[in-house]
Length: 101
Image (cartoon, rainbow, N blue to C red):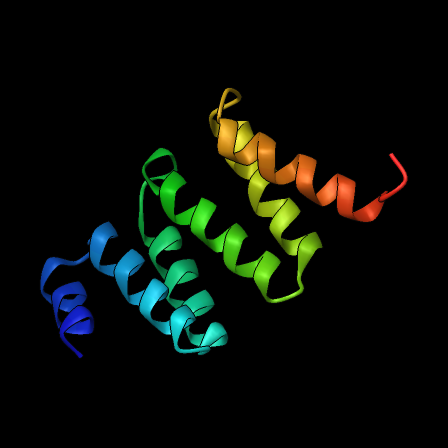
């Protein structure tokens, strides 16, 4: 409840969104966590939402949605081509899809 209040008061509060999403994910409320992250990303300026995008990708991977995670990670790399976390995430997805390599 307090995270939601902070988000309402502060408008786009990346930390509050991220913390709420982590809390929701930890309590296995994955759909709600995904919604919080997507709403925050949509409300922010594109470059400022990178941390939220990375967390969304992790959540999607954990929810068994690797193709959606891949799309999010590709967006991160379009905005920040040197982002090591996004590169590592895409490599992990590629390995999971091709376990013999």
